[in-house]
Length: 244
Image (cartoon, rainbow, N blue to C red; front, top):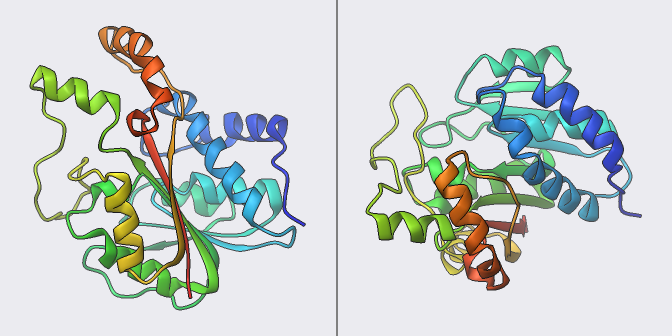
C-alpha cells in the first residue's frame, strides 16, 4: 500500500520545523513556498510504500526532516555546507557535505528515494552528469524526484520583454553556491534524465501557486494566471526517474 499525506499534520510540522527552523532562506520564504513542499510530499507519498524508506534530500534538507517526522523515514541531507546542517543534525537527520559539481561519489546504492528540489538550476555543468551521480546513489529501482523552474514560465517571459536579467552569471562555483545559471524546458530535462541512464522518466508541468514579492509582479501574475491553463507557461517542472 502507498502512503497518505496527512495535510493537517503536515501544516503543523511545516510551521514548527520549517518556518520556525534554522535554514538558509529568510523566514518569510518558507510560508510563501509551502505549496512546493506539499506537492513534492504528495508525489512521494503516492510512490513510497508504507514501510520506512531510506531517503536523501539534496540541498536544504527540509523534505528529509518532514519525511522523518511524518513517516519515521531514515532521512539524510547533503549540501556544500551551511549552518542549516547543524540544525538538521539536531533534529535527527543524518547530514553530510557533498559538492555535486566537483565532489566524489559519496553514496553507492543506498537510497530508496532522493529529493532533488530546486537545485539543478544552480549547477553550471550539464545536468546529466549530476543526475548520474544521484542514480548511482539510489538502490536498484530507487526513485529520484526532481523539481526545477520551467524555462518557459510566465515570469521569464515577462523578464525577457522588460529586458530584466533572468539568470546569474554562468561561472564555476568557488566556496559558495550560485543563483539560477540555467533553467530547463520540459524536453531538455527529459533528455538529461534519459542521458543519465534513469528509467521510466516522466516530466510534468506543475503550478505551485505562490505570490511574487514585488507588487507589480503580483499584478502581472494575477492578470496572467489564466495562461496557466496552457501547461508550458506553468512555473515548475517535476521530473521522476528510476535507477535501473
